[in-house]
Image 1 (cartoon, rainbow, N blue to C red):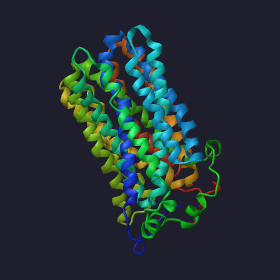
Image 2 (cartoon, rainbow, N blue to C red):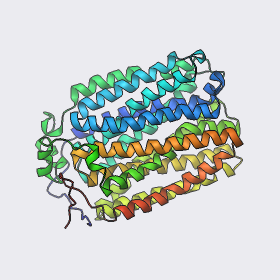
Image 3 (cartoon, helix red, strand yellow):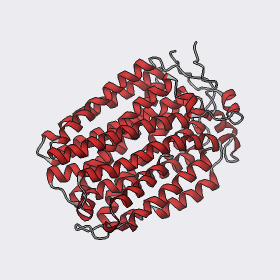
Image 4 (tube, rainbow, N blue to C red):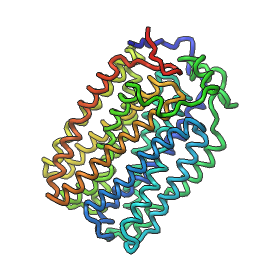
Length: 444
């Protein structure tokens, strides 16, 4: 089905309370990524302090992603069943406790203790994106969702930028004070949960949402949105057989590349160019600042096409193609002797991935009923986490076996994978055929 876009001339975007909700999603995502990114910055330092091999470091990352995969299935279902107000609060509480627990670990506790802390962190953090995407679907019409997703997703890069800044400011070159880097987000998390519980309600129930703003939010299908609160959420097992679910889930395999940039770039710069904490911080700040721009620009790109009359299918997939092409040059990151050229190539690819991610997330809300959105995002997140685990397993052992030459193959896979995956997405759902609340395909 080719979707045509209706120009909303009678429904103007009056009222702005939805952007307050969006700001909360941005801050939650910032905290989420700051917590998870610190290990990528401190990894080379902790490798020396704890005496890890690359395989040990890979196993620590595998533990995070295994819990992330389990959490994506579990948290997505919880959020669909209990709603974003309670589900989001539970998620951030879990990840904050385990994030701060890292600071209590010592080399004498062994590798298992660190693996346990990363496992708990990964399980809690899995709830962020299912909750955020579901919230965007509740508070924004379809034409604005990619842009809104790009804005909250930009928090991932702000958090990733703040992680090396925090490490740079707190941790000495010899690793002294490394524990404090894991504690900085605890206070922010507590404040976020308190604020969220106080201000969040669905738009149709919120006293600060005007009738005009509610009409704008619900302009796509008022009848379906009014029914949403009366219909039981769909479990993930019911959405799993549909090609719409798998188109999104296969798209999320690119998370493996993003996890590689996040958790292994620090190791790459140390192993290849001898970077220590200060230079490493500069390189990673460059990477994540460009990624931040890509997240917002990618979401706006889809909105730009739609507002010029493109149908939803063409707008989303053209945006994804542009993003994929931005990632291709990263295959040359290991072919330069200049570390800052390598950093620039990784930065461009990171910006391309985040732009890709902003558009990919909207595919779930484009084609699935709202009551199934978080579950579908959870399934996709699980596939992305498992893909990341496979990369960690293979890359860590390959690095221990042959050394830094293994990075060449990972960057080659990273640069080529998005175009291949976009082709698969198109073959699975060439016209972005949507499903109704009974999971039946909507045809013209």
